[in-house]
Amino acid sequence: MFRSSSATARVVVVAVFITPGALHAQNLVTLTPPDTPRWDATVHAGWYGASKPGAPTWNDWLDAGVVGASVSYAWTRHFRTELDGSLASEGRVYSEDYVFIPGQAGPVFRTRLQEYRDSTIAASLIYAPLDNRWVQPFIGAGVGAVRERLRSEAPQWIYYGRPGSPVIVPAEPDVRDVRYRVLPHLVGGAKFYVSESAFIRGDVRFGAARDGNANALVRIGFGVDF
Image (cartoon, rainbow, N blue to C red; front, side, top):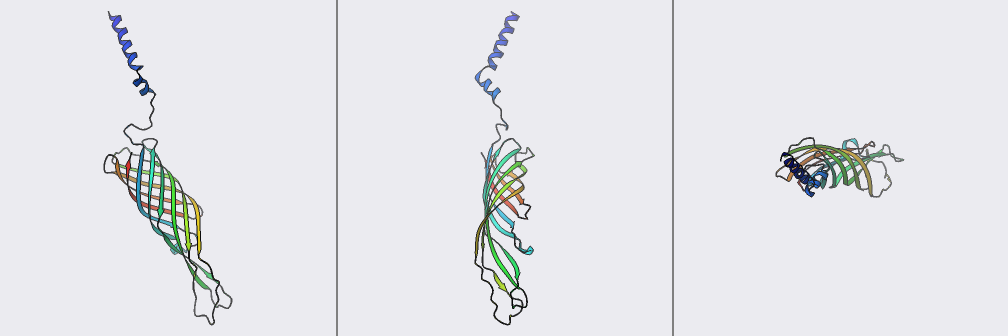
């Protein structure tokens, strides 16, 4: 009687483990818990600043507004990959130099207004160290490609003193140009949840390169998990 009951129990245990549901559960491997959304998306706005070559030290950093959006994918609970796009409004800086003209007692000082409009696509690896469900600070690093559209007016000439006779200066045309730059960056901020899947996000991103080019973003936005 005892042996028969023991054999029946073993048959029941084996049957449980070989059911399709049990086999599927054993073979399923997930990197994130089933209740953690893998994707999120954010729209944001804020301030954009960038240094520009050739500008004087007192005016080498332009200011502009910026709008954009980002989407990220969670590989684990703490690590995400993010793709971000942003478009800045027009920012202005002034370049300056001195030109010596034959027959002029002193140098001629000239300024040129340069108007830039930058757009950026950036990819980042994001690390969120905490498990708090409602407040999630994060840090990250990545690289961004910047499309820099330049519009520069013909320089304005300023004389030191009053010239004794008319001075002929060379004419220069307006400049239209598009340049591309690649900058590594660091980013840090936090997500503040207002519901189970909606959050407010604020972050700061700074990018720089060896040639002296740099830019910065300060943003706030609204996002959702899905």
